[in-house]
Length: 313
Image: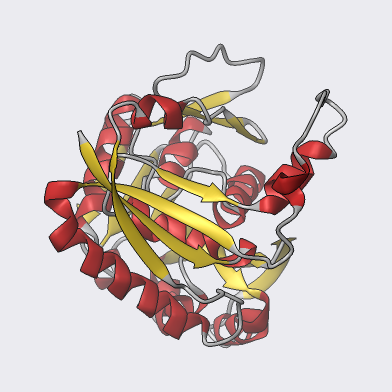
């Protein structure tokens, strides 16, 4: 089978955002080539390195390559959509997050073995009690662990990115067996599924993207939690009668700011609102607009350039 290999030049800070965009449009793999990852592995004392080619760490430009593999037949319709979504990210970040040149190139390649090669790079991701496991990997959970399996289209939230991992970790601090959770912009469904795995009695998941809703539905079935999840392609915030003990929104800061007047009406009194996807330069503004809605900031978490917040209603 032939593929179009799309390569976008970005930065370490922007690489996961670009990869998330690509995952919306392909089931055939996305790869990030970042010299910082190689250096981190080199410094990992839990592994023994017999030899490493010096050229692997010779890149000092900060250029990070994100590659997507797209079926040739799909490329004419998919490539313009990816470009448009990347341009939207560039506009939203507005200099607050370095994204690099975002130069894009593509070429046709033979890819019969690509999926199997790509799959070998994925490993379970441990986020407190939650362990995120690709569906093709056998994993025996340890004491106290809860497994969240994700399908081979690991789109819209895998636990690898700081924004998602912070949400999952904060969720574990506030969830109770009686919790009703609302996940705004659910993507893969990882947050809502994690909530149910951690004991929530019900999770509402919503997204305006049809591919995300399809992925979340599949993952809910894969994890055996369909009976405790409601997944819809809609703006769930239009329904003011729905109230959550915990609300989660892992979206960009600009969208969070726009949603600030709407979100509190769906949060129960005394409930917890967890926000993520907030770059450093926009943190103060997000705190300001949600505090203005009568919410009290109770915790901040930071990983790399990203921040997550927990508010009480």
